Length: 78
Image 1 (spheres, rainbow, N blue to C red):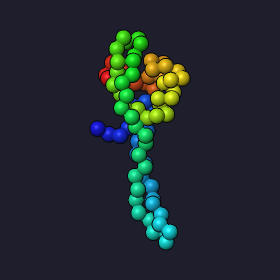
Image 2 (cartoon, one colour):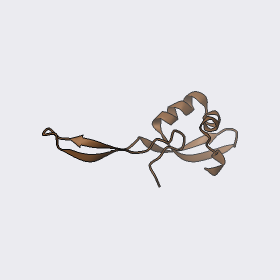
Image 3 (cartoon, rainbow, N blue to C red):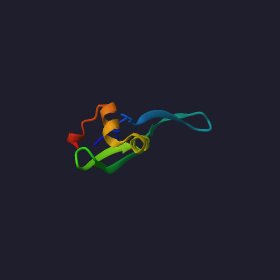
């Protein structure tokens, strides 16, 4: 399963790791993705979803159903 947020679409970034002598090698910057079980009030059930911590904070602020509609996420799939 891909390390990708279902709401924000955040995914890993590839960047250069630069040593003291300025040699470059590739490194992978992964987003903070968490697997969460959230209560969906309108559906009357829990949904298990992988999302970033930034999306968790927004869900706390706006609510799961409203934020899912804004992001175009169908909660019936989860």
